Image 1 (tube, rainbow, N blue to C red):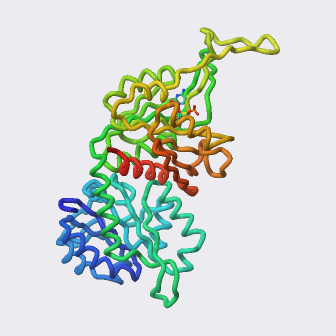
Image 2: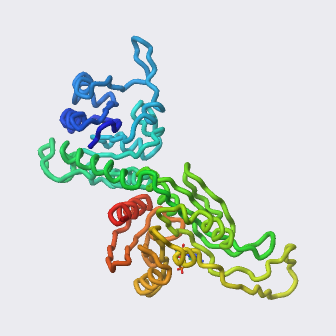
Image 3: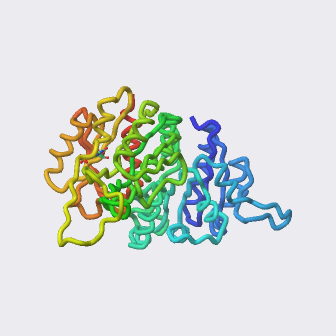
Length: 396
Ligand code: C5P
């Protein structure tokens, strides 16, 4: 199952580090290639020799070998890995990761890793519950890192509660599922509309909206993490994915044209753009001068990109969004039908933490088979992962 998969295991100073010996053995047994990075304090809990022997690779903890001078390149380690798993993650390393501190090889590798990053925290009950720890974990989630929550049970301190690192067998199952999921969408083409559209009133002014492109960017990243190819057609947003093809447009008409051009080759289409419903009928050629006390701008309806492509849909899987302020469920279900979506993601501006510019979202899924799933408030990165998980389960 894990044959040939390259797993970079990063071990921090926590008593749960002893479990990594078993975990490395399980990974190697499954055919994975494993390299281990350790922090200095991790070595107080388990020896590098143990993990080097079990992983059949040298263990890295310094930037260079003091005796041979051999340089351990963190960028190369990050590029080598298909998955970086930080387990156990200590409160100290968590705090540094959440704040961009980079004072050891593990942290430098984390910052330069291009692969998905998962973390399995382990610490004492009160440390785990401390608002700082919880805030830092949320911050990692907002960066797109996956958190394998600490488990409940007996802790090394003698206390009982949440703080135990997931057991090696459980970690193995999570890693296997991650790779199994990434097989389903590998090489699939995902077309995403994102951001706002700006509709010109004159060469200087426009009608637009507050969309930042954060949700679309999170969706692009989540699909890329599972090996899909992403093409994004984006309005003038402030957020863009760092890789994949990005086609920049301004208006709804341009967005329609660029999306239409790419639709037939797409396997999955996500309509996350906040498209302006109307545009000025006759945008002025020159800047409109301030003269009268009032000014009328006649608006005409913009094309509906999702509805247009919904009619042309063949085997594509279409996902739409509904941002509502009232009658949320009814409106979302109507749009699901009218625009021929397979899935619609409803978010309400009435929910705290949901909507434009925010890093979080609270959504409900409605699909064409009348399934409904309400999610709690999550980071946009996690919402994006939920969308990807849904596609993995439901793509024929
Ligand atoms: O009708 P409403 O704008 O609420 O529909 C929202 C969904 O339709 C979103 O997925 C949005 O990206 C898409 N849409 C579109 N073209 C429009 C308006 C909305 O693709 N002109």
